[in-house]
Length: 166
Image (tube, rainbow, N blue to C red; front, side):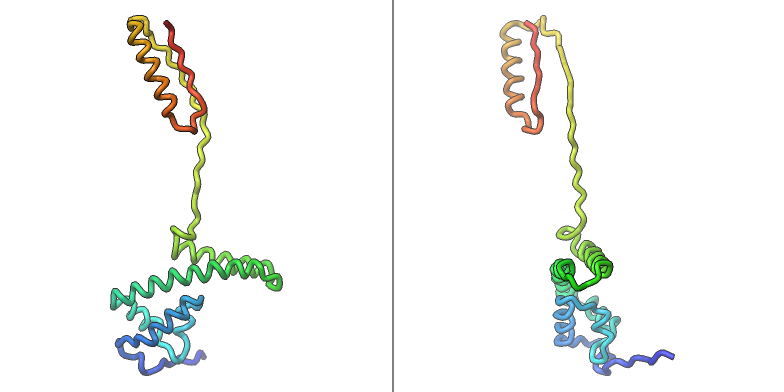
């Protein structure tokens, strides 16, 4: 039968212990899981700690910031795991994958998977308008405007072909 865990009596009340709260955040920023920290006899139960977080916007902001810093820690740790020649390759992969998932969820803008779409397209479109009704001056003005448009075109389009019958 599992031994029932008792918690430090100081945390039975909902009153926030700022020193304990800050210590948990510090340990969290250094890669420890809050659930693991809160299993220690000298720490508040996880639900008590999370009630502290939810009860005060300032505490919530500090907690969220600590989570973000924790992702930086995990990111750096992934490099260490990958460089460790003593660790089993399969174990390393599991550890890195878990951290990669975690940092991608907590800080998706910074560490999330970015999907890059690259489109390579060639557009060929020939327009041969009937310019016979235009005066020579109007045709020259049109030609000048088209040349200006070609020069102002984005560099990704390699060329234009404009044919004007006179």
